Image (tube, rainbow, N blue to C red):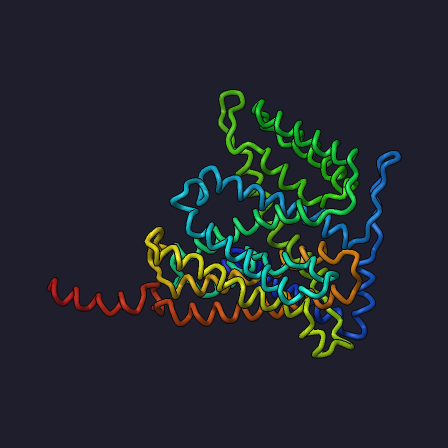
Length: 412
């Protein structure tokens, strides 16, 4: 059994498959007569943290969304910092084309949602929900195609999703904040300064960073700014490399490696299970066709691929950029569709956008995210299955396999 679990964990598609299983399990739990009350009770378990006069009272759902997702954003921040320093975002030549595509992939879905909800100020605040891309889910789905997918397409989709996450972080920080407490915000800002000082002094012990980051997280909860941003600030403070006692260390890489499995196989599936359960009783066609669900679904399914593909295509046609090596417009169109798999990120932004709007928008948000993400996944897989060369059992393409015998005949 343990061997099977380890083999599954090594699969490229494992994160996406696990998220799908968690979402399906949540749907079953939310709709099965015997399980629905238990599912709801699970999400509403009270959790209290008290240190002297300071107390945090949350239910388990909010602990997941405010606490565990801060760890997820910590990992996202670590990945973004590493990419900015030495990865795909380290030079304009590497990030220019996917960066422009990511901008189009954020702007057009938001515009589609805003147009559909233009007459409803109450729901207009959800404009950012279809602008998000779920890295784990989209790459997990792409991995289902195996060796058919060239590395350049994986890098393109990853870069688009990373820049998309940067945009999502910025949107959360600017637009989705409650009434601000200047005192608590000042404490959080002081924590950020301390983290910067630790970084500049070359501190490699992570304990000090975690202590300051935890205090900053509490301050952000009290400030009205969403607490998950503490994870991003903490991530950018962790040094990529540092020398201590003559020994070079890589604190950022070590932490990223240590967090990856926890986030991939525990935090994100738990978030999906807690937020994907939609009770379908009483839901009508009007709910599916309502402005929230329709705006999100069309934003993900239509806005994402057109926004990414149109902007990158214009750059290529103008001669200012080239398609990724080893692929063409069909491959880019396929991964542009996969970028419409918003799932966990879209659900998360939805919890912020309609935090005080009531259950009706919560259900509509989930339906729109599910419809848009599932449609994007199927459309992207279909296009890529058509566009990419078929692979033989040894991993070579059919075109390459057809050439090999001729080469052997010639050489003999």
